[in-house]
Image (tube, rainbow, N blue to C red; front, top):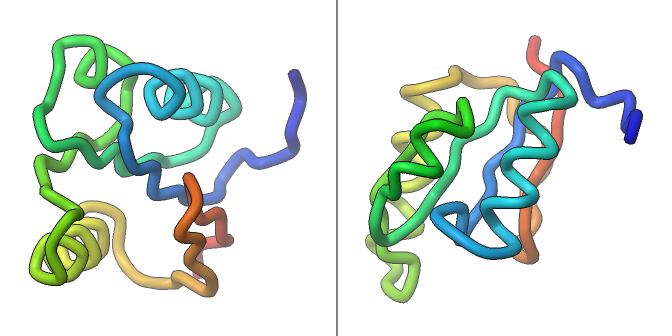
Length: 92
């Protein structure tokens, strides 16, 4: 599927397995730089080509940590965030 997302950045939550992992794989395949957030970093997430981040998003501190690690891994330039599955934006 061609989504025309190459060169963009995404944060995918629940990326360790299931739907989140499938979304991560699809986005990486489209040329998107992905931060894959999961409570536990799985071998599948590592193999998907994302930047894995171990984080518990059930706490406010977890959300702050994800934001900090995403910026550290992929830099700034974020223009939007989605609380559903992923945020896609152009890098500067």
